[in-house]
Image (cartoon, rainbow, N blue to C red; front, side, top):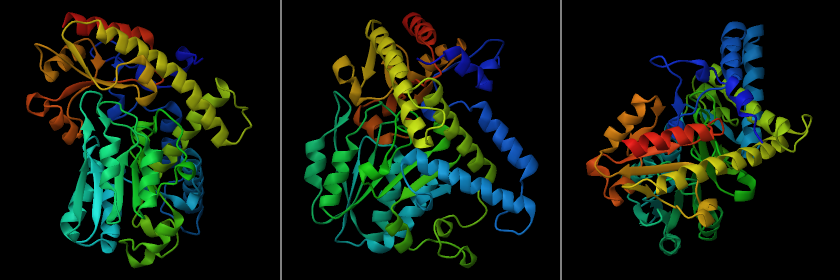
Length: 413
């Protein structure tokens, strides 16, 4: 079990007061709070190592070493090799960058499969690529009662003309956990690329790109307690073969050909610190030894985190179901909670999402309202024109007491 008091002491935000009171951070799907080790690592880099890369002098060599170490940490996080990890501004910009490179292989006879459940960052780069290349976009539909992908419909869209299947590991809007392994298998059987948006899954579960056998996968460190940095995994063969849009001095070596220009060095170093923090949870509270490989410690950490988040989710959904006039979007049956993440979106009759979020904010309970950039599902659910939904996103540092406090406010609102 997590020692939540000890865990929360490691996050500076929990010591802050907002309008004189502590905050309940349920805005986690939009960005988690940052661990103290991340702040320290970034400040240390800027103080002691601040230089551009590949120089012969001390600070440049230190920068190279720190970035190499961070790339190894990111590879452990995703189950990849270091050469297959590309750092960038965020998942959205990395996806647009990749779509530009892939466009050279697409034409009017090709098809791209996207879903109506996804964040627009895993939809619109591919739609725009289709517009540029003449390819056809096929949309996988959603079961609106459970907010899950219609898997039979999705499978029916994949055929010999399919060149790319883009799907989210988990929905940032309604918490649905998708069966990406099966979808990747369908894409592979058709000879199509698979692209997985793992931004929302990364703070909640272990990712193994080798086991998934996906072609590409992206996530963002600021969703797993780190800084604003994006990570892109690509199979080595693809990254070597595809043309990267870069300046000439960047060269053809991996992963540098995909990281043209000066990177966010301090952010990359902070990303490594966030990953090491997660690994420490596996050694402190899980079954892993402190001397075990980082990947083993990370796997143990996700077991502990998952157990705690399941308790939080149980309390939240059970409490919401007991409040009159509240509608929960997505899976609500306990037997199916293995198919969802600890992200829950709701509406309450008589209040707009903005009004309900404002009531919660008045009590220092921080939640997001709107469509969360998941425009398609917001439209499909019929809530887009009336303000979207209110999203409550749980993380491992949240407590049952915070859930109870929020439920009481929603009940009174």
